[in-house]
Length: 598
Image (tube, rainbow, N blue to C red):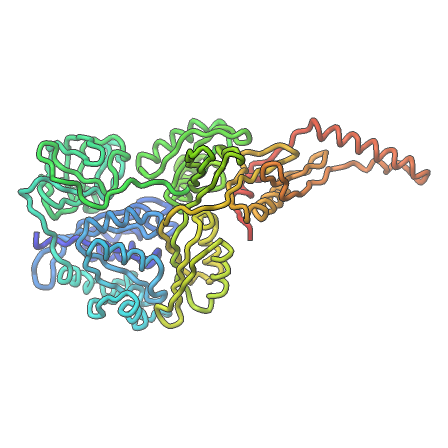
């Protein structure tokens, strides 16, 4: 056990986690140059294209140190985005140490701080690594000063490297061996293991990524998941190399996989404890919690014939993504679809892209919403995420919406625009300090609903890409929520209804009306597009009618003749409006749902 080191790489998005993992794999010659490709541990096309890690990955690296000893290094590559912070926390719980990767050009960012605090809560030994020292804009000395002053880490532990060129990688490996402690544990004690990830294999069922803290597990053992008391028989255990490598057993201190014929990933919950059925451990490992969706949206196929395909596609996605939830939903305008719950906006985008790309289904998604609390006059409490279930306003006593604690780090020259953006999004309790000369750490509390639309994109635009954003969920607070309906030709379009704060209702309504006016083609009669709260119209725009020039054949003559023809046309248009239907094209839904007010 003294020769095992379990460690993970944590960093802000795009600071080089996957690239450093690639260099480790190449250093150990685990893959030939011909078979090598960038982001080797990332399986999905979306991960490679966007340069992000969505699913936690693990690999076991055999390393011969400079002192001649042979070590087993278990590397866990974690996701970087705030949506997946619980997965990161469970990966950290399975390690003894962490490499904190910081970009030499960008310095400490919001997610760097968030992940550092997670690692400190888990009592990990942290080795700061300043990456990308080969960049022309790199300033390792200034970043090292930030690490010492802002993060409070020891400067002698800092290692410099360029994950792209491979410079400094050997020194990082030596630091892992010399600075990180070996795992503790007793193979003779009852089995105690944590699940930190799971993926579905069509032939073998669920493959559970696990860290063994106490005891041993081998094929033939009967194991139990402590959160749901599910019992399974172990078929195979092993280590993660580039392919799965079966072993006779996994012992305390090791990181590996268990295959036990689990048919559904949802049974293997992140952070759950595995123990033996007949000889269980005394209590589960701390830190486990049920992952709850935060953002909700309805998904509809553009073609109604694709409904069955969409149902099958969601079931298949659910096999590999236990945090995705969905249930059947229907809309008068869009037909049958599914109401889905996501961990955040990136998770929503990833699911949408995978459905369109892997299953070739064209989709429409409704406006993302969060879970609101409604307290009625008779003291009942409703949890509502769908505008269709908005209760009668006369029965509502009060409403609550979720708030977040946001941390934004950016160069001080952008202070004014960033503060205005936060105030515009109903930010409160603003305060800031200077972690390093020229950089500001800005803290504020905001409603989650104001962040899930396009806050991150706006922040990146205002700060020219230098701003970084991280948040953690806070509590529920009183709010003044209303249901905003969009009426086209007097008819409510249920798919465009939104739950919004009263102060934002008119702004949202004007935006939706303007977007619909651009997308809905002109008809033979005038069309009114309105935004309404209950029976009160708060915004309106008109699409003028296409009309034939009925006076073209009148050469001169009395004006009353022309007026008579125009009046006759007007009466015809009025009659047409009462019986005519307005066709709303699919692009109109997408235009309203995807872009938000400027």
